[in-house]
Length: 187
Ligand code: GRF
Image (tube, rainbow, N blue to C red):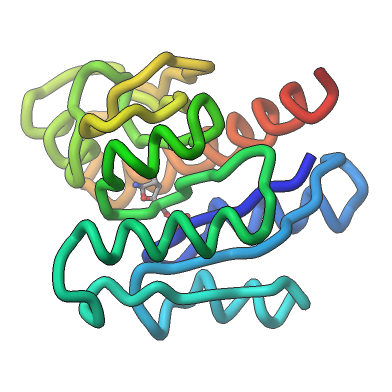
């Protein structure tokens, strides 16, 4: 199974996937890693691991449609079976979703449909939930919507800050993503 992984930031979840692939624990080929802006650690660490990388810089395009079209074109050129949004902080267009129909996987640090959006951990904490978690789902054109593939729960501790809670969620998120990719690859 060939995957393209999209990141916007540090890519620590991506690193866990890279480690699993390199350890022979995940029968997946990472065809490329792409970002929506230059200078991400996610792209840097992928290049260091010998993985092909690309940047489709949102700021270099006249509008969202033009950016989306180019992102779809570049992703397609790697002929992926699955495109993984792993901390990719931009909404893609309906055209992108159609092009990768049923192939665009997203990870989110909350138990969807609760707390979608860019601040899922902060919002869950602010609401005062006692249990939150992470979700891996097939993304549609909405914000963190689409069929849920798998979830894991994480207990919120009284002393949690956004950072400590997000770190514990990410431990689960990494395992869950690898588990889901493994199941898809072996299906
Ligand atoms: C993950 O929790 C992802 O779900 C969220 O941002 C985090 C990405 O972290 N949207 P990293 O870039 O993998 O370290």
